[in-house]
Amino acid sequence: MTPRKVRKIIKIDEEKCDGCGLCVPACAEGAIQIVGGKARLVSEKYCDGLGACIGECPRGALTVEERESEEFDEEAVSERLQAARPVPEGLPCDCASTTVTHFGPAGAGHHQAGAESLPQSQLGHWPVQLRLVPPTAPFLQNADALLTGDCVPFAYAGFHQHLLKDHALLVACPKLDDFQAHQRKLTEVLRQSSVKSITVVRMEIPCCHGLAHMAQQAVADSGKDIPLREVVIGIRGEVKSSGVLERVNS
Image (cartoon, rainbow, N blue to C red):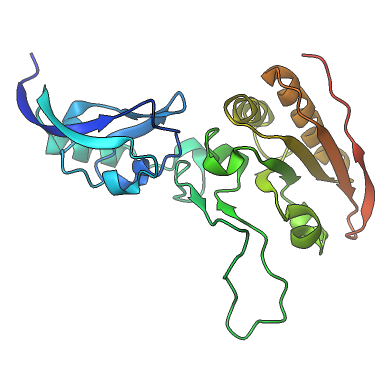
């Protein structure tokens, strides 16, 4: 039987938690994860009870309480962190899918020294890759979403000013990424957030057409009435077409 004792341990108020994920990287022991759109204590033995994660919660959902629980197991934590070192989902970097940053007004106050003449960035949050964005991320609430192919910002010079401005960005590639996994993720994003509309921006090349299909099916599967719009960009950077994207039946 696992030894238990009365000690300090983290407490998560699920009513207050919105699943933003800021507490996850703040917990060096990896005791907290986002499960079902909420922060959860993975195991009592991983929590040291020091509360380093508390200050990162914008909703005040985290507190430290004193109760009977499993003892903190430093060796188990070390083994867990060692096992977690391979990058999740095969990503070629150490990006944490639950690290969410909302800059507020897009690009506000962020100017590069000596670059006053450069166009201002309209990106207002991080992460942007669809696979890394938590469905309950704050920047998705009551937002107009921009679902764009990886190549679009490179081809279209006016991407920030004409498309990204005032939108929550989601980036995906229907050719190189796992299409089905992305479609399921987008469906969950729509189900768990309050996205108001989706603008799909894709390249004119055939493989990128899958991005529009992904959005259409995700909206249908979400069961919500979300307006869809499509913008097609040519490989020379011109806008080939723009208009309403028809919805499909689930």
